[in-house]
Image (cartoon, rainbow, N blue to C red):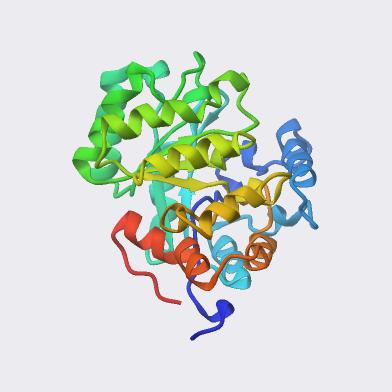
Length: 291
């Protein structure tokens, strides 16, 4: 059997810092300091690591240094953080065998009908591999099962691409960080693959229970895997959740290389580690990833 360092690694949540000042592109701004602050909060040993990749070439070099084979770029479209799907697609084109783009839409900003049309264009024309829903971060915060989001999930199911649902402790109103809302979506669209970014931390037991009940729910806690209580994700992944657990570095909010090293030391079984680092991602996207 190949050593863990020799096997492919698929990073399910990574965003180049140069995409937007929210990700740390611009020194001497409040956003830049927030990136450094969040790195400190999630245990980064080098809080300035994100400054090393000012362009796509350097970003891929960071992936190489970390041993990451492919990365899923999940940008955002919420008030204050607008990364266009066209811009993200251009970044993906710089390394099409390494970078996958996931489109974002804001149905509160542009309306449900326009959001569905843009999501369809992003997948069918621009080549995006999924649709990102930042439910709790829109101007009007939503839970993941809000009626206005259902047409987006239906489109994803129809197109055969996963829906990425943003969650976690940075939701402006924590009442919208609700794993049970995902249960409704999973039951309504049983053929839809749902990726729970940030793993609905800190409601770990709740999202693990939802994943137990719904095999189309994937848990991607990324940087929160290493936060207090994160061992429950690992316990579940070593059991029933093996085929639903995903690795994500959460770059630029945590270093890629440290993310890989820390993930290798979590105590995952060999089967669970392989599933989380590339086999589940391959199945999710219908692609083959080689080291």
